Amino acid sequence: MASLRPTVLRSLPRLASASRVGASATRMTPARLTATATVGMRGYKSKHSPQPLRDVMTGEIIGLPDIDSSLVKITTTTTPKTRPPSSKLIFGHTFTDHMLTIPWSSATGWGTPEIKPYAPLELDPSSTVFHYAFTLFEGMKAYRQEDGTVRLFRPDKNMARMNRSAQRIALPTFNGDELTELIKKLVVLDSEWIPKEKGFSLYIRPTLIGTQNALGVGPSSDALLFVICSPVGPYYASGFKPVQLLATTKFVRAAPGGTGGYKLGANYAPGVVPQKEAAKEGYSQNLWLLGDEHALTEVGTMNLFVAFKQPDGTVELVTPPLDDVVLPGVTRDSVLELAKAHARGETTIPGLPQKLKVSERKLVMADLVNAEKDKTLLEVFGTGTAAIISPVDKIGYEGRDIAIPTGSDGLGDISRAMLDQIVGIQTGEIEHEWSVIANEPNA
Ligand SMILES: *Cc1c(COP(=O)(O)O)cnc(C)c1O
Image (cartoon, rainbow, N blue to C red):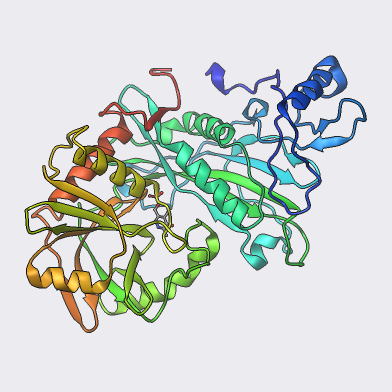
């Protein structure tokens, strides 16, 4: 496993893109960066830890180090855990042997990445994460094939979204390609934890928290990025059980100008009480609405798709447009891209209707009520990394239930076609540029 050894030679420091307001780091031109780096190579600085970029003439610090995967320090566990049998896995309850941590400070930029045994974090009780919700996360998955190939699915999308989230709450941004490289090393090191059975994968949870030890509300002077991994089975253990939604008017998940379009920790705790209230009425999740027209936004913590039959037989697949009340899901984007390519006739996805129209447009509850009456409501499903596709068979709205058709296996035609296609790409059965190999085959 030569690729897992810490690399001794370090690459040139990159400019950290700290979003911190008032951070002393200034932008510099590539020419200047090269000049400074040359000084570094003459032996000015240590080659083993991140170093600030200094002005070649004055020695003044003009840029802070970004994440540099070549500096990773790897300490493997001496006490590996026993892996539970795949059939016993509960979503997000079991964690692998190792984790990745990368510290950041406004004075020194991104520090040395470390892959080390999974362990509790030690944090000062005054850390900003505990008081003002300086925390954001990502959710992505790794898949292992029979031959040992480990694959990630569209990691660039998660990295871009994580940086957007960081910017929104003044936590530091970073080079996403470098974090992806580190995540690859982590999942390959723990690849024995990735169940090979169909429908199983490794759920990866990159997280970024503010760790400044002071109670003032402001940009955090310190931060910690960490990544943990959890082997998971199919989200719904007993096959594709459709979910029942309660169209919720009493609470809103996200408001215009708010933070619903970012994967911030602060968005999720307030959803638990509405979820419990829906559960009390016999529904599994909330259908989040917005405004007097009861515009549909998301389901639980998933994006929403609805399929309608049009008079000429065309099937229209609709999802609400991305704005600040809808989280830009990677699965949402994948469903849209695949469906659009099929609709354009570029690729044929088995099971999708021949006459398909794909729309990102506003949807209101009256559209669903009318479509149920006209028998033109074909399917409703949620999309997200955890479940991929989650079919819906009932929506409670204003005291009655809207019935939604599903197939005998719980999935509608579009849901099944999309699920098969996406899973095929994720697992490598279908060749696609979205699937990124983390190791060499049979390495
Ligand atoms: C994470 C998330 C989604 C789904 O995003 P994916 O990238 O597809 O996993 C949708 N809605 C909310 C609110 C989310 O947090």
